[in-house]
Length: 340
Image 1 (cartoon, rainbow, N blue to C red):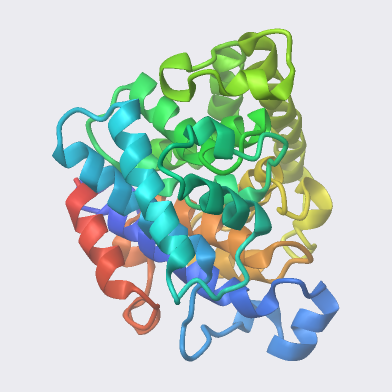
Image 2 (tube, helix red, strand yellow):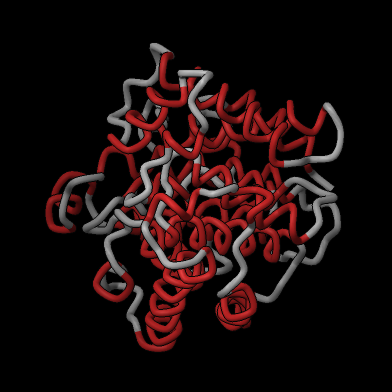
């Protein structure tokens, strides 16, 4: 399997992989590894459930994708149009009867507050939350073609900040979208962690005020630069752990022991990447490893699937899996819109 072809359909591959990882990890979330093995058998033989039902991770990814599509239909992507469109999609998701997949309390509470059109979105953001809900859904920002670096970073951080306002949630979302973009463009996985570290250092003191407004003031930091640097520093620390893990971790060991359980944004990024990097050319094995973990298995696996699909393309996923995953039609529609 190769990532060199220009027709790999990275967006379709990433969105499909995200949903497949979500569906595979849904039944194993909250279980420890021995319990998962007792329920599912050997982890390398885990089967996609029937039906292949996803969680709020995929639902919110699609909500973000719809919001981005609406905002860009009106012209160049900017913070006001994006905030309005994505806010409406998040609120609609929260009110949907299909929002019954054990969503996170941060997302629920923030969306309840976002439903008030008179409330600035910054006042709805949960400023002290850095849960993985911030970046489990950010892949579309990394897949939309034609964005500038400033647009992509600002959009990644804004979509996170609508619910999760902690600076680490913003930085981890930015890094996640950047990783998806690099892989979609064919970046070599062997150098990926180094490139992400460089990106973090370059952006460590950059606060995207055009996109975030005065969000930072709610955290009682002395300055916007101090606020955002806290987030980048936590992400740099976990990237150091990831770099060591890629070199030393056995594929048979629970990845969460090296890079964290994935309940928080920076650990979800690192553990999702670790599972991908352990099995770059074996995407189903990467998903299975991510789903058989002691932490937030569905979110970790959905990120692993997004990274693998962005790098390898739509053909990474066998039809007997891809055709069964919930929301398949909308995933393919959005993917086709952004495939290049």
